[in-house]
Length: 283
Image (cartoon, rainbow, N blue to C red; front, side, top):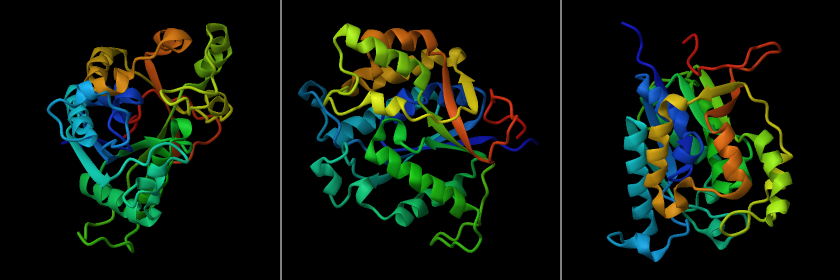
């Protein structure tokens, strides 16, 4: 009998699983892959219109509910939380909260991720790129912890209280934002009266600086067969705007919004390797 294929995404907040890589997760779930998510926080610092709080006692409770709705529609087999607190954007007071993800020791968080890698035994692990997509502190923190956990999981000399045996996943990928279309959007925004250096609800996302970082793309996943599932999952995150964008970004997203891209960290890519269309090819 063929070995069960498993994919583990390690992310920071509810909605990261859908807005960033939801198409990929849904596609593999449809193909019969066991898809799991480890989410570091419950998005406690996310903005929340009071109208979305009816029936919920906290932002964290509301956002967890939205995540579980999205996970069901994407076809995820399991969702696990690390129980840290959303750290907010760079320089915010939330960075200093004692339970904030960015305030935790790297080795501590990495050990927790290692537990899930050894428990679930995924062949493929996915997390954010080194700048966390748009430099969110929690995205960068969980990227670093996942990279470290990927190393520790296969180290037989590294012991956890659960005493699970070492396990070596086959591949580690970083989700990358499609910077080509973002660079075009940055050029078009001033024509639409938008400042690309002050984007987002709080105007604290600098798209110009983000597009100046260029990560190689080693895999491109066409998720058109599950575009509907991704759309329905996005709607679950109603309090966070359902991933809705407007203006030139929305136009460009519609043009290129049929695939998600990844940089392969392990095994190392060698010159001449073709662009991958399947994260599990050959496994």
